[in-house]
Image (tube, rainbow, N blue to C red; front, side, top):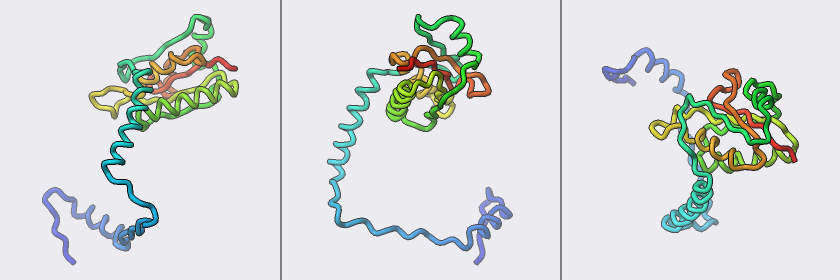
Length: 182
């Protein structure tokens, strides 16, 4: 069976690809479970919007501020000494646990971060790392998760301070967070 190469193709690459996938076959789709009644599309859309409305109310309460990919984040409560803040910025606290929020929606990131902070505080973990990314894939919206993290962490009493991580730990794509332990 002959193949016709377009003017933009690499014939050697096409040959290699075709030989690599020559023994593959299409995946058969499983028959849909007929025992479950299907929810009409309009009703599913309505339910989806209701869920989004409750999530957007939570997000509005914690509305993210704007930030840039290179911006260094920094926050401390009055109870945190300058020495403790200096040690945090220098990465001198051992990281007890970390969470990576890459690829999440704002709603999911907020929910997961809230659970994570509560868990770490209850388990007496003093310093954690939150990887939020620099937002380089967010296009004109800028770093959405980073902006959210910047604002969300300030709102929670368990958070005593945070600052951008050292380059070895994620730089401006992550923060060290100092927690109040319960």
